Length: 272
Length: 272
Image 1 (tube, rainbow over the protein chains, first blue to last red):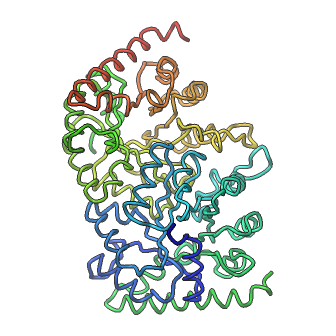
Image 2: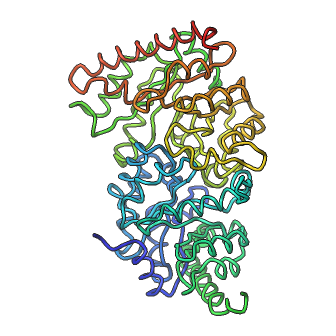
Image 3: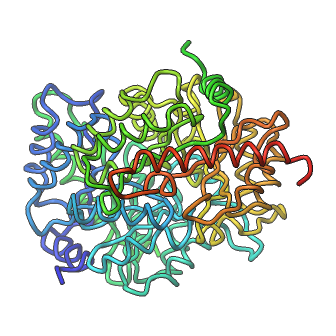
């Protein structure tokens, strides 16, 4: 069996002393004057010693059609071995189709982990967790304003839907490769979910452009060892400058974020 | 403004006297000895006068990497103008990203409609419905076994989650371009949702390989005019034969299904 996702993640977390994940989302409306692949390569070069993982969101590649998929493949190939790559696809389809998606993402493209939408239930998740060396992040409490529309619904069990999702994910975690997506924009929910799932890796978007609180995200998101929280930032790092110095500016921003996260970690006992 | 999705749908429904939609899902494990594009073209040629719409599921194209996206583009281009094409993508992402997906699916690829996962709430759906001439099918009650895991959860309002989704979709339907996905494998839920949303188009998978009851799907799924139900079948038509006569066999199967649907329609007053 290949290296397990969680071991790969802890490896880079420790080696780079970092909980920072960078979302590799080349948005044509925001890109400096450079080709998308050169942009991705420059961002990777500038941040490779500062991150625990990279997370490309499929949307920004799909919009470029077949060229986008080639761009994604070249980007994956360019990321040094050993750094885990999370595909932000938010898949959710029936078992038969989920199997095909799992093959696309893990076998064809070679990602280490993927994000999954829970709405379709267990048979939509199973084909992914069956790849035991890969990670599967189930959307629990997402970072966007609409999250409340359904995820906050109170269920007959007196639990909100996102809490039921967290419980089910725990129950389904027979291979120990499930994690949860919890937005930094909802710190109370994050705290609660970390208590319910003390050992799961949490993928935490919502810092930066979305306005989530970094101190609370770190304090509530990490496990007892101060690890297994993947703090994702995309736009704030990628487009720190839209001029020629974009890579340098991205590195500066990423370094600052990583160090801020580490200060939060150092002082988290006080916050608690 | 271009022709609205719903008008395009009613156009083919009436012209071909058909509520049948064929899922164009070229599964390499099941494909007869023929290239995927030739397969799709042969299926389209054989069924073009028998369907109200086609529905490619992105999974079967993504697994083929960049070649798959070219295959999808060529397939879309080959389908005669006037026949609506629904992209089964089940997207669900935060507003900023949903906007990029909407552009990918409607502008870049030119689809007439798309399927959307509601778990992320309104801001994940808005960018799609803002394309007012396109259709947006929100997953309500899916056809798979895992559907019950979350969709059946009873909410504090005494409604099941899928009922809340249907209500919200109705509320959000300001441009009249929202529809719902409801699996034929859950006929009671289908009946209930049709009562709640008497005018929405319903995309109904689950007939054929998944075992849904066709008579109930038609009887409960159509609107008062006996329209706006899109009965999707994929494997049962596509792989009716895996030999050289596959296109002929697909046509035979599609014709039989269309005619069965029409008999159900004719006798539905008795079923009710």
